[in-house]
Image (tube, rainbow, N blue to C red):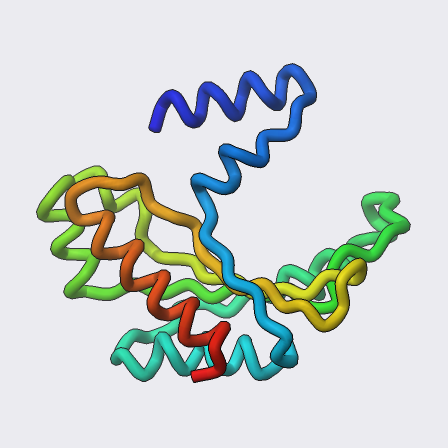
Length: 152
C-alpha cells in the first residue's frame, strides 16, 4: 500500500493523472436507472443485510452550494451521494486478521450522475487492498453495489 501512496504522490507532483491507480482502488458499475432509484436500492442493499447506515453524505449538493465560494463555474454532478456503514461481523473478522484493518472502517459506497453524461449513474466503492480479512469486505461491498446497479 505504501507503494500506491508513493505512486500517487509522484503522479501528483509531476502533474500526471493516474487512472490506473484509481482503477485499482475503486470498483464501479454503471446503470441507466434513475439516480433516486439507485441510491434507494443502495440503501436497501445495506439495510436488508442488517447493517445500519451511519451517515448519508450529499457531495453533489455541497459542491453546488460552495461553487461560488471557490470560484468554480462548471457544474460537475447532477447528483452525487455516499453512504457509510460498518458491519460488526465482517469488520471483526477483518480486524482479527490484521489489527491495522481498522483504517478501512467504516465502508463507503457512492453513486453519482454527472452533468456531462445525464442518464448514466455510476455506483461503486473504494476497494480495500487485497489480503486477509479485506477480501471478504471487498466481496460484500461488490455484492451490495451490484445489487443497486441491477435494481434489486
